[in-house]
Every structure is written in C-alpha cells, then in structure tokens.
Image 1 (cartoon, rainbow, N blue to C red):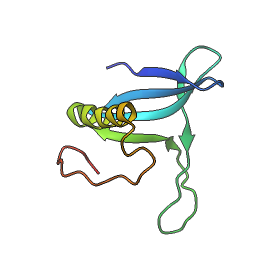
Image 2 (image 1 turned 135 degrees about the horizontal axis):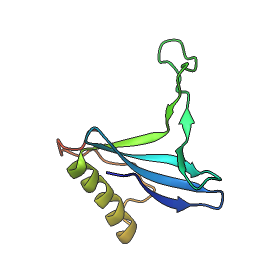
Image 3 (image 1 turned 135 degrees about the vertical axis):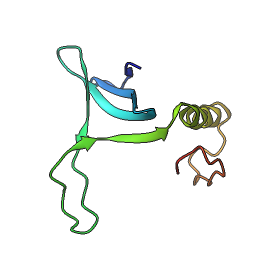
Image 4 (image 1 turned 90 degrees about the vertical axis):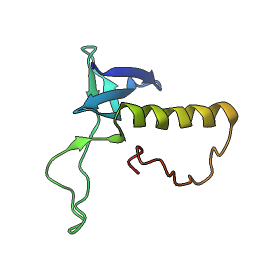
Length: 100
C-alpha cells in the first residue's frame, strides 16, 4: 500500500497513514518543498540512561493490522461524531486485536 497523507495545519504539516509489514501506523510528517511527504523524526530517550538514543525514529502511533487499525480509527470517528468521552480518560478495551 502506498502511504496516504492528509494535510493539516498551516505549515505543510501532514498525517501519514503508513503500512509496513502488515502493520498500520499514523505518522506525523511534513510536505517538503519538492512536494514529497517526509516523516518527522525523533530521538527517544533510552529507558535506562535517560539520554537520547543515537538513531532517530519516525514519530508515530502504531495501530496494528488492517482490522485493528480500522477498529481504532472507527472508535475515534464515533467519539468525534457523538462527542462521547472526548477529553476524558480512555478506558481499556478487551479486544485482543487492539495492541494496547
């Protein structure tokens, strides 16, 4: 699947739906001057040393396989449509397909 990007904000910001090895992620990115989309890269802290790691990784949220990603995104859409639970702490789900 080719990445799908949605333009957001005023500064060439995009959200990119990415598929890698059967898992879907939403990645923060930007549209370059050349018209291509690029991932925002971050240097996460090492858990033990609390120092930034040497290698950058994309700033992303992993959603899981296609079915799990669809369920998660559907839950967000339903919450936005109904105004339910927006701004309240999230509850845990018992769905084994959702990875968190």
